[in-house]
Amino acid sequence: PEAGMAYFSPAANAEEIVGLAWALEEGSKLFYQGVSEHFPDDPEARKMFGWLVSAEQNHEKHLLETYEELAGMQPDFVKLRAKFSDNLGGTVMEGGISVKDALEWTKDRSVVESMELAMAMEVNAYDLYIKMSRAIEDKQAQQVFEKLSEGEQVHLEKLAGLLDKRV
Image (cartoon, rainbow, N blue to C red; front, side, top):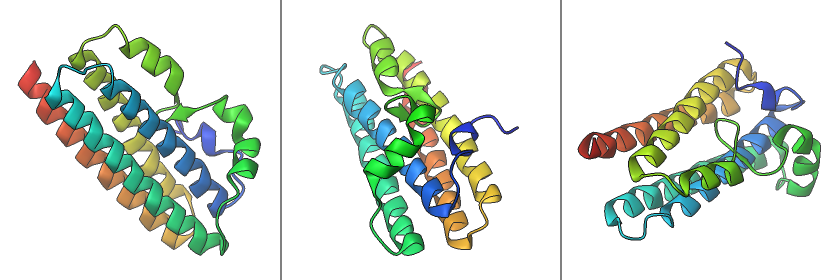
């Protein structure tokens, strides 16, 4: 039941947890930007992945606002990345998947297979954010993680709708 929370184990406080969540959202955004470029002749898929890029940017915005409210300052991303580099091992997205590896995998895959990977990633993120909302003590951060889990659910619904059309 604690799978997926391993990235957050070295985070000592709410600010660091929010900062780490931001890094995972950033990785997901980069993945969706990259995968949309794999399908230049599929406007529907490009639109879906573009929408997901915007959604991840919105999540990042909420996380940054929460961080600033909790810490009273802007995050020091150099410091946060240095602290979590052993866990992240580079750029990692929601679900703990390397952005580079995921993009490499999608290069020779169909839109359907890429959407299936995106759905698996979003399910992991949904699950992680529910766990985080329960594990973190700060009420404001709990609300942010609850909102993020709701957003992941919307991502899943949109991906499932397009996948249903394709399969």
